[in-house]
Image 1: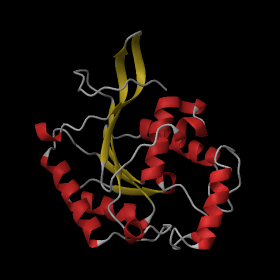
Image 2: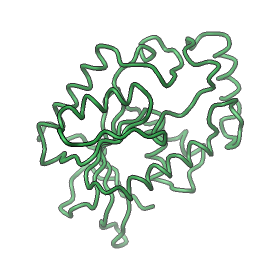
Image 3: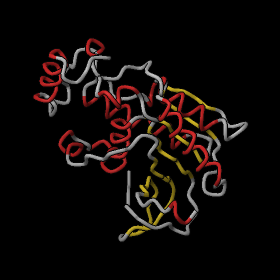
Image 4: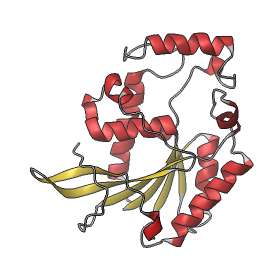
Length: 231
């Protein structure tokens, strides 16, 4: 996969635009607990999702959504459905492919300072650079990377030319790093790119033909510059 980072729009039309979105705030975001799949949004999280939905709907030329894809986890689906309310006729489609990177089920719901959480995450930290480390029923690095590559392949093949994808902060980081490094992504590369998504933060990705310093390419691009003040 090829990538050029740019803070400005290119005049060339893109074959596909993906608006990458993190879900709204949850109770565990406030308390620092380990999240599971069924956690809902807080009142503030729903308000964040409403504000994002309004922003997207106000700019139909910039965000002509044809589909809203979402993680199957409750907090992402709730965010996606709030956005979907502003886009009548646009389907909201959940998928297990886009869920958050998994912690062991044994510690989900526990506070970050719980002794079992401290011990389990300590083992994970010690083994972070072992791509096949078996993190109980959590995911290995190899599994997370493979799922992010599948997600990009599905987005590339999707019929829609403008798609919203509601996912999670850590998995969004894996998607971005797979755009940058593809199959060559390692845990060391991931650790050197600590990207941070605030709740309902967005990032635009595009797939199509573009020009690089060495010639014409086809692939994904990342647009990190937020020019919302120009909308």
